[in-house]
Length: 312
Image 1 (cartoon, rainbow, N blue to C red):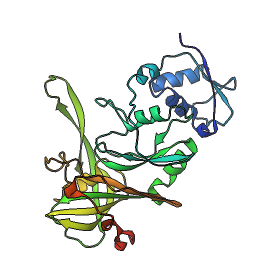
Image 2 (image 1 turned 60 degrees about the vertical axis):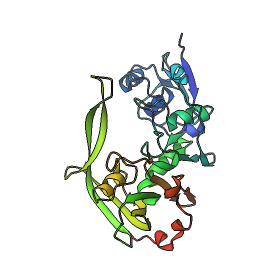
Image 3 (image 1 turned 90 degrees about the vertical axis):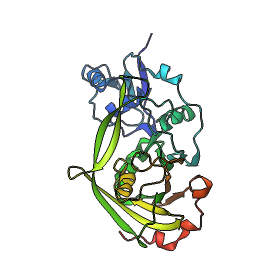
């Protein structure tokens, strides 16, 4: 039978709102409304006293959590035991090289994800390693993961202003510009119901992004690195992080990313979009993509000095 838990707040966990701490500890298996009810009725206490849901926790405090079945035990049976490719790690964060085809977060239809692998690989961590940002399932490359709440919060504050995010992509056609070019649109996410093969009448919701005056502003920059056999290698810099942003902005300019079946063409290649560089004051990480031989990227191609003389 489940029992009352008393959890000591570690330094890595300090600074979280109580409700967020409970969501992480129960891995969102308990409904938000139920967690709020626990707090309102005094079933959750801090150092023996009633607490407020949005109060922030301090290291050394003891949190009482009532008996419950969180689903964590059943989840452990499906945790992935495949290892992540770790590029860098210290006490505060780690940088991983995410492969194409692996979603960041678990979801319907996905038995594997970055988050599930993190839970297996770092099961002993007091603060569950948490991705700071997202990459599409089919996008490969560098992903930043926080190992403490203080680092997660700090990076979220500077993400849009001080963190540089550079991607590489092969696109169809010859890119006509020889300098940094601004890509700007308003993008709207539409949800479409698509029927699964041989599973009538079951269906799932798919996202497709379109340009619309009702959408959110999306800004990117593109720089040509190479043209080979009618394909162009671009360096891409994100200013905003909308869903499928680069894929839609390039496809609507008649230069879809190679391997993009949703916005481009059906081709025998994975999506050739890769998060190549991730940097902020004091840190700089790069990782070249592992693409098919005909699309292999040379380190010389990404050493173009004009690439780093960006003036947005």
